[in-house]
Image 1 (cartoon, helix red, strand yellow):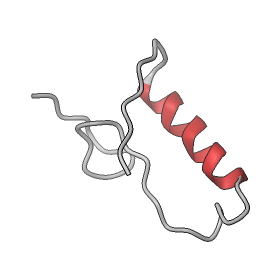
Image 2 (tube, rainbow, N blue to C red; image 1 turned 180 degrees about the vertical axis):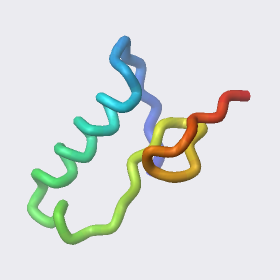
Image 3 (tube, rainbow, N blue to C red; image 1 turned 90 degrees about the vertical axis):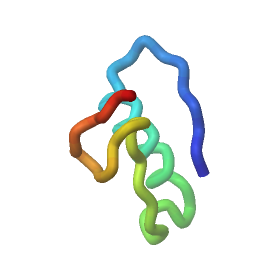
Image 4 (tube, one colour; image 1 turned 45 degrees about the vertical axis):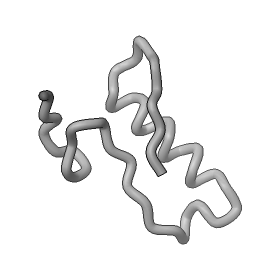
Length: 50
């Protein structure tokens, strides 16, 4: 799934909040997922802009 988020917050802060929300769900700790900022290829990687 992909979502657009309009916020004034830092992208890394949004990623942390999103992960916290997913992990709080019933099966959130056993599913595999990645939460990335648009332009990233892997977690904690450089964010490339067009």
